[in-house]
Image (cartoon, rainbow, N blue to C red; front, side):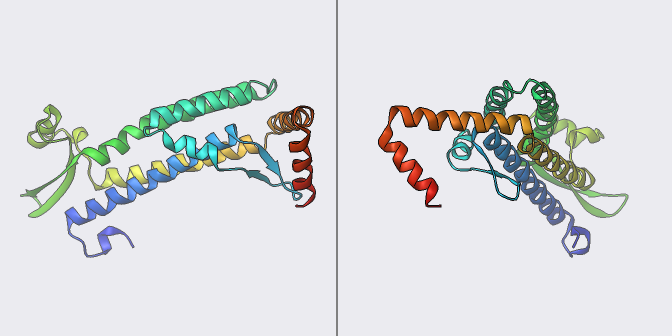
Length: 221
């Protein structure tokens, strides 16, 4: 049910849309964490051929970074290292991530406004109704510009919030598609399998007891 049909007043509708927009941005952060995990963790292929992700430590590492810029840098490092072995497809993947990262940076500025701007409600003589909008933080120069001028670019209205929600949802879907593109990349899968095989061979040579334990675990599954 849309906020306009829910019986909420204008300010309540605005608060509901702000909450929806911030929640939708959470899906963007979740997709980013999955991209990092795909790049930092082994890829497993089931008997049905469906790519699967091993979560755990990589995701904990990702969310231990408490700001978006740090998280994007983690993905940069993991993606560059992973695709450095992909001679045929690596550059195309890095170029696509560069575009997605820039889009994420720009849209994060909108998310930050939702988190930090103030709700301002005023009486509109032409409509004889109260109207609410988000305006910059009280006391800032842009706050007074939004309040005392007709500069619509310095405030956020309901129509803007609906656009934010749709753009965040679209970005989350694009990031999910990118994650699946990495998972299904045969060149990257081959590289992952070769590394995994190398780790197992090294374990067998350096620690026979641990190797026996690994063999037992593999055969008991």
